[in-house]
Amino acid sequence: MGDARPTGSLGPRLAGRLTADLILRSPQYMSCIKYYEIDLRGNKIGAIENLGVTENQFDSIDLSDNAIVRLEGFPRLPRLKMLLLSNNRIAKIARNLEASVGHLESLVLTNNKISELRDIDPLSSLPKLTTLSISGNPVALKKEYRLYTISRCPKLKVLDFKKVKQKEREQAEKLYGTLEQQQQRQQQDGNTFEPGEGLPEAAAAAMDTDEAAAQAGDEEGANGEAAAAAKPTAAPSAEQLTAIKAAVANAQTLEDAWRLEQALKAGDMPSALARKEEEEQQRQQQDIAAAMDEG
Image (cartoon, rainbow, N blue to C red; front, side, top):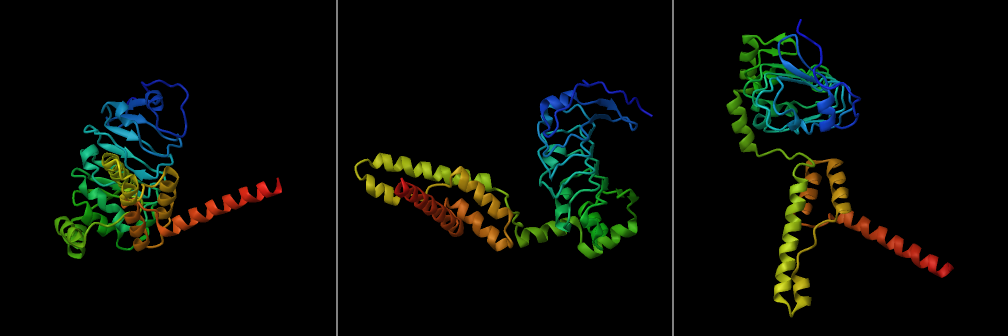
């Protein structure tokens, strides 16, 4: 066995966030497979962040037994070969992971919340992924799960601690086609909308449009009323943006989510939320008027 004695600081850990301080205080050691590893287990971490502090020093990062909900937030870590993420709450995997962890060979996602086959798709961009575990996730209960995963990750040698056989590769290709064929079909079908994705960018675009219109109105000068009438609807406030994000996350259908996203891109409040806000304002005014009458 390798030397398991930690070389990092052993001071108290700050639970809840993956801070630079927590990273610097966590144990670092040579694992039994001769990987230089950092132990970030059991800190109630909710999101992956601040890993740039590691300065790409580690072959393996252990983030097991936390509360992470999305596999995202990595800086560029070309040295990283193994990620251990068992016993988290991961339900979504970010696209374009190859740009940050493109040399990843082993990924352990045992006992998380991945539920749909399409949620596995982003892993197809990892060119060196040979070992993967998703057992203990709801998706692993689906009959077609194993062959689908093999079809999406053709370099896999081990899936859920079981060797991938040539017969399985042939069956996967027969059922789902090659990875290239799947990607072509996906492009023809168009990108799948993911609720909540792109909302900050859309809000920023709406605010930029509003600011540009305001500057144009100032340059016109004399006809202030006309400029105000021509000015697009103001971008959502921080409170409105929060409400829209919540509405998108709770949308029952893709159509509802799409309408909410389009309203945000246009800088408009969705009608249902706008009515709710107006009703709330009216109630507040009525309460103020009633209080004045009583006084």
